[in-house]
Length: 394
Image (cartoon, rainbow, N blue to C red; front, top):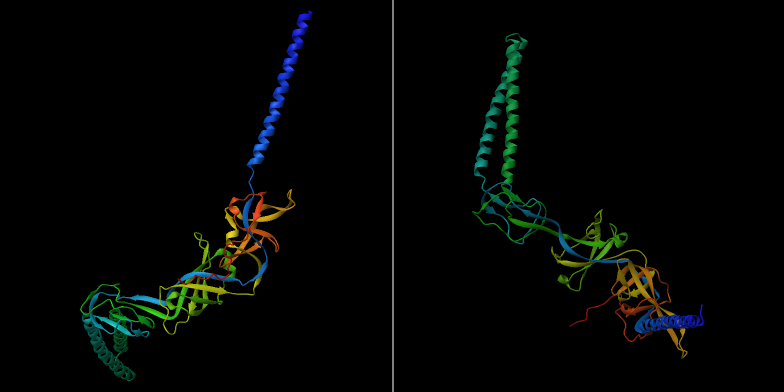
């Protein structure tokens, strides 16, 4: 290798070393700048409102909405077709069970019944004659003045007439049942609705003549979610309120619970009975039901706005101490935590698990937080947190 060749090689090596060194320095410089940029992109401190958790007494309560219904209700109609010949009631009248309300034309049926009853008289006379003949022939048979065959014939005649009378009695009962179908009667005691028929009107079977409602007691049907079904049982007391009777609370009692939960709504249907001696409540009225049972329990409570409900579970953000900053002031960061929620009352929700008393929870501003976000606390504004919120009067 010549001296010139060696010199050129050394120069090339130096140039390659400079290039490689430059690339390494540039890569290091780029990584440093990216790290600074990412650090600069981190969340700035976010202002939030907080609340220190504490335990409070919580009375197990179920509150639901429902519709009032009559304990018994029916739309009264005839079983057979006919012309209305008599109306024995007024709209809105109170009636007793068995009271006749309306009569349809039944002249042909009554005429047929009269014929059947006349036939009964004829057959009864035949029976009397047959029995008399049988007694006379039985007496003559003892002195052998008549044959046994004649007596047997007499007995057969008596039996035949008795069978005809029995069959006729069944026909009469059937005819009376047909007559009864032309009469509209009250199946139970209650209050009638508005009359839907008039004298001389032709009624087809099933055509409504009037409605009948038993208003004392009343009933209310309502639903409760599946996470509250353990708080509802037959026999428990309830309070019912409605703006149809403002300012009054009606005492009720649970009388039935549906034995299955709806697969569509995951709710359980419950029925309660309400005494209504003054008739203040009417079917169809919208009402609120409140059920209270058992002893109070202690729960951690939060404003409902503090909890984020997600498909994967309910979460809250806690404020954690992160030491002090360069000026010696305390630093705080956000920490997300899963919780299990329970019953609600007003603006509050009970926390069954996931929190303990004394922890600081974010109540407002949590939508802009994630784990590790620095936070600044400003509690000048707090979300609604009333156990029994009231609608202000306008």
